[in-house]
Image 1 (cartoon, chains in turn blue, red):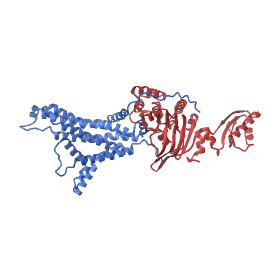
Image 2: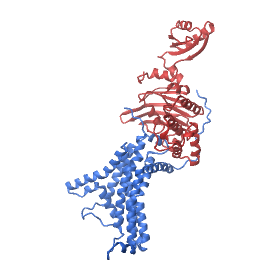
Image 3: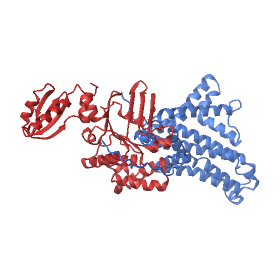
Image 4: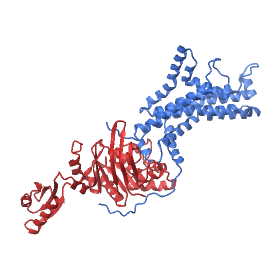
Length: 291
Length: 313
């Protein structure tokens, strides 16, 4: 029998707020993101369109440069909502590629390594764990979506005559909102699908499939039933519609084919709720299930 | 603050699969060994204790705390899982330091506690190396360091001796013993019963999700009345002692020790046995050197109550 001296002392020092502990996991996640050469490669490639659009803004606002490369009295191109919509659309594809590469690295490694019991035996909930991963993914995707878009907007505001920026502030708000909605959706979708697959490569494929397969199904539904509502399964089309409205750009859809904004929002919310349900089901510390 | 780990009629089902069923336990400070065959529910019991899974029914409190108050609960509980798993890409130092940050410990304190725990498991020199490059024993040690780094009052260790060489095993056992003596709760599951048995105050036997026995090892052994107790008596005339003992009814087996300097005696009534042995010693015909129980350890209890096939007998 032990003789209890009771001289053991538990830690009684100051403890940090809960939210700072989530940031530790976010830091883990960001380190994981940048540890991959493919992630860095994708980030680098995503800068190419940014540079092209940057040059475009420069040319549009510099009369001498424009004279040198345009012939006659060609007006060149306008820097308007349509220009920024193109930028956002381009970058959103990079965001999808990055999300499908990064999200599995954030979740499937922990699942495959059985690291969840160690992480969750700390004062951090399953929600906190997912939030930490979400912050890492959101931050990474921000670097290729709304941040470069707003940087271009700021450059255009600086280059153009003064009233341009103030007159076009809704474009900036649209870029921010459109970019954030897309990457929040992508992050939740990526994490949820990754949590169900232990093989990273398979998870990457499934994330791509989750975006494109429903679009095909939606196209078939629309064709057979002669309805526009099949487009609700077509995420790229749905997002383009939403971005057009947020940036106040011309709607590319034919009259009568447009989907109401409320329906798009409801669809995105429903998808997010399903993803959160999937995460709730999979992110658990349980180690052993006896058979 | 209550100083017990209390299970009140706790059951845990994974869907239709039974984890543990109707467990009622009260574990005081000291070292408690969880014993049971594979799949008996030991890890489920530990996961319940550490708040990693919620009971399907019943109530658990650890030192009066429940996982609902996560910060307070987890600052008092340290868990070393049996799985050789870590978040990827971390060095030993980062693993402990980040674990402390997850516990909400400030950076300055975390720095000191990291160094202290690494020194305690003698991994200070390897702290800067990636955990992926550690040997199995080192990974076991770093998990232990992570579990004790934040100075928990309850330490739950799932198979903590697996993969350790004899030297490291002895060091770990010494550390457990020291922590137990200091008033910490240590709950250990291990298949290396012989070694854990030496430091354990209590044993909890579980099989098939059901609690079979719990309590002080010697008391539990005495409760197993249908299995006669075995005692090793070292003496100069073991044959004579065996013949004298067989004169009474309760002595059912005698086996000479391999070195011929002792005899294993099995008796159904240990009190009468010791009384008779006293008488023989007083007679002076046989010079008795030592008397020691030979089967009131966790290993023997395991064999008697659970058996080699893993089912309760």
